[in-house]
Amino acid sequence: MNTCIKVIKDAKKYWIYILIGMLAVSISTILQLYSPWVLKEFTELATNGDRDIVKKSFYMGSILLFTYIIRGICSFLKGYFTHYGAYHYVADTRKKLYDKVQNLSLGYFNDKQTGQIVSRILNDVVNAELLIAHVIPDLIVNALMFLGVAIMLFYIDVKLALASLISIPFLMYANMTYSKYVLPLWRENQETIGELSGSLQDNLSGIKEIQIFNKQEYEAKKIGNLAKKQTNVFLRATKSSEIFHPSITFLSSIGSVIVIIYGGYLNSIGEVSVADIVGFITYLNLFYQPINNLSGVNEQINNAIAGCERVFEVLEEQSAVKEINNPTGMENIKGNIELNNISFHYNEDIPILKHINLTISAGQSVAFVGTTGVGKTTISSLLNRFYDPIKGKIYIDGYDIKEVSLRSLRDNISMVLQDTFLFHGTVYDNIAYGYEHASKEEIERAAKAAKAHEFIIDLEQGYDTVIGERGTRLSGGQKQRISIARAILRDTPILILDEATSSLDTKTEQEIQEALEKLSRNRTTIIIAHRLSTVKKVDKIVVLDQCEIAEMGTHEELLNKNGIYAKLYPKSLDKMQNKHSLCY
Ligand SMILES: Nc1ncnc2c1ncn2[C@@H]1O[C@H](COP(=O)(O)OP(=O)(O)OP(=O)(O)O)[C@@H](O)[C@H]1O
Image 1: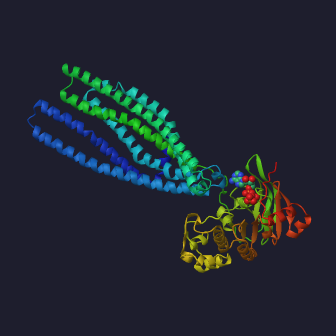
Image 2 (image 1 turned 180 degrees about the vertical axis):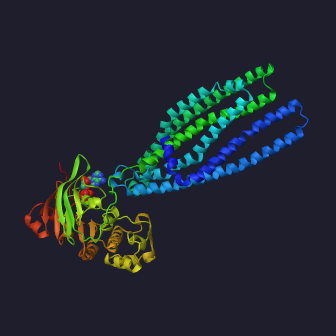
Image 3 (image 1 turned 90 degrees about the vertical axis):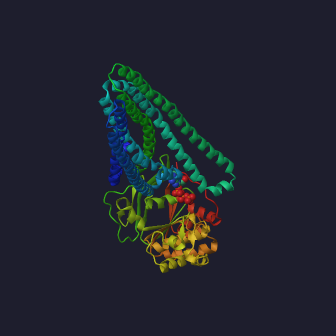
């Protein structure tokens, strides 16, 4: 029930459309009560041999026609306006969900499949439409019908009306039992659909790996099992429904049987007329209809609630990285960075960084080096507040980064990552991503500085070439050069290069290296690199080991020290893969 109220409150903007729909459905339901009454009156005229039957039946028929016309109009109003409100609400909620998801900290995505999240935004949200455009109007129709018909039954004959109520408690009980038993089954059904969608999304993203490793058979079996699991859950839920519905029909027919037998008796002793019995039986069909429908509505409500709950679960998710109320903006940033006693872990029992203290002056270039998995990229993630440190504080130009808006923090930092993601769009669009107002000249200048211009003009339509989803039409090195051009264009005081030249051949790497050196001259640059030859010229090299800063200094100082760096350096020249380092 809470979920229904939440949806209704949330759809406030569309209440007017929903209300028009509800009003229409109410009028239509009340008018529906007129038809049995006409039948009863007509039977009375016929059985009494009324002389005015022609005039009176014309009058009743005209009113009946009028009610049918109004009911038709109401049906349109109900159908159109409830759907109008519901689908607009669905669109708004999809946007709200997407917006929520894209602002959650990266930690949220660690244990979620993309497909599961997509399924919530695409499928689960549709349940709000089910609730607004179907379940709520159905509830109103059924409640009004039940009440209206009950009044008419008691008006026609109290004894018959009481007799027809005998099966009501049994029907109610059956409905309650049903909803208690079936709700979890429908929830499970929604979950398995999400699971299936998640695996499909995963597999389609990794289709290349599936083919490389010849895992088609294995993956097809996995998807087949999930599909079967969903079918089984669905069938279990359906089986309960199919047992339930005939039982409900049986219980409601018992009421009709009682009325027929008892009505016949009352007629024989002159207590009710034939017209009353005809009217009564016609109304009686309408009377059990809402109770029978209740189970259908129940089923819909269960489905709708299960889906909407999954939507609110995401909407109410608390991001691990939160902005404070009224955060300040960072202005005129020079690029001084201070890591003050930083400790961090992803999982409590595996520490990644412990008590890191480091100061980087504006304009300095600093390289983080160390074995694979030692925590170099993690430091850059902390600077961007993709995660927050467990302990300690990070300052940029004296601003505690937890106290500034995420937008202004990220506006001051550019990143070139190991794994470059390009969006579906032109080369222009992709370079200007993050700096939409750039002119074509600025974009081309950035591309030239990133040594990307030459290959771009060789593309079919140069800068206007559409590069496909994930930039599949470009090589790894080309993608990385576009990513470097993006960073050059943004011109932020802080630049993070995380394995930025890893996909480039040695010659291009040398050329880009020069461009990057030029680029880093006026800004604080943090470089994360395995190939230590690329960090020889930086102002400071920070060697991470066992979760801590093990060594720090220039290339020469560290070589002379003959410590970890001195050991790593020749290995990196040989392009040897480093080993994983854990610290317990
Ligand atoms: N999102 C995450 N959830 C859990 N553990 C993670 C996550 N990201 C990284 N880790 C773990 O944290 C450790 C540090 O990872 P990080 O990416 O910072 O290392 P790195 O030094 O940059 O490695 P590489 O040189 O291979 O890029 C690794 O053991 C890694 O497995």
